[in-house]
Image 1: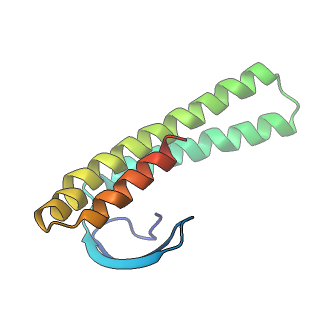
Image 2 (image 1 turned 180 degrees about the horizontal axis):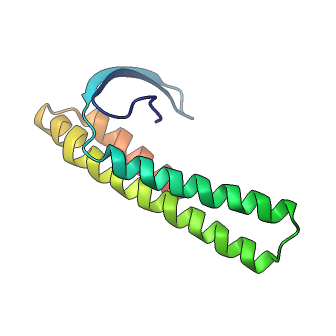
Length: 115
């Protein structure tokens, strides 16, 4: 999920899954770690830009693979921050309101993240 402004957004999400259902729900998002997420995304973008330049310049494959590992690490780090924030806020609220659908969505998101 990408927002133009990551902080304190009230948004309506429409999700389409590979299965046969589409749903939408509305809830407030107050992201506690916006700056961390944006910094990590910037780092990943920088590494990916380096990879592109390295490929264009015909650089050594081993160097390119090292940069790709840096991209993966930056994305994993970003995912961890977002996942923790989601669990600490959205999922805690979902459990309090007995919203089993939010737990199913989390499980699905984790499955996709782990691929």
